[in-house]
Image (tube, rainbow, N blue to C red; front, side, top):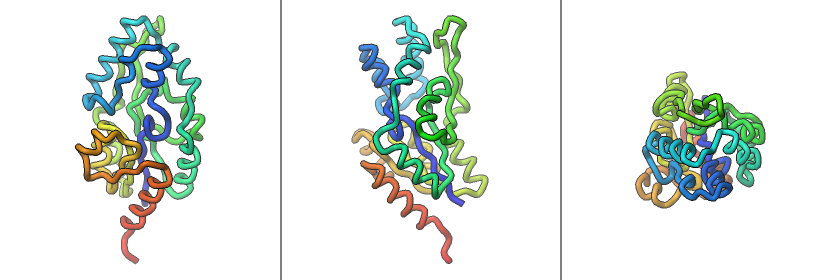
Length: 206
């Protein structure tokens, strides 16, 4: 039995914080996991920015409502789901993701939650569990699944290392240089071919 695990932002949908940065005109929000490998440090930075600029959860959600999947992402995901069970492993938040999940056909999503006060300000965040992408892959493997995974950022590398086969899709060159063991794919067609090839290699003989 085989499953596919995919990151969300930068893989199937645009980076939410980059779009939020563009819409608010605040360039500091454009910093993502492609730039900062320490996720807690990155989120504390974002929470501080939100507080300093008086921005609420609703301000972020209004931007997300106008976003959609990357071109070709829905078709790619639909084709994958014809062959594999697919899990989206993301460091986004359930409070962000619903409009995007709806447009992607509601695949299974494992992510985190925000702590929001009565006035609608984001005060903290709660991890589903530390290193949740790697932990999810290990849990699936403990259930006797072979796992094929793809992502684009620092926070995906644990998942890719734990998987039976791991691939980059749309990664920045700075990350590729640090993790040359993961084959790079620049399109959904390339990634689908890579996943299919890995699936065949992982099948037992006969």
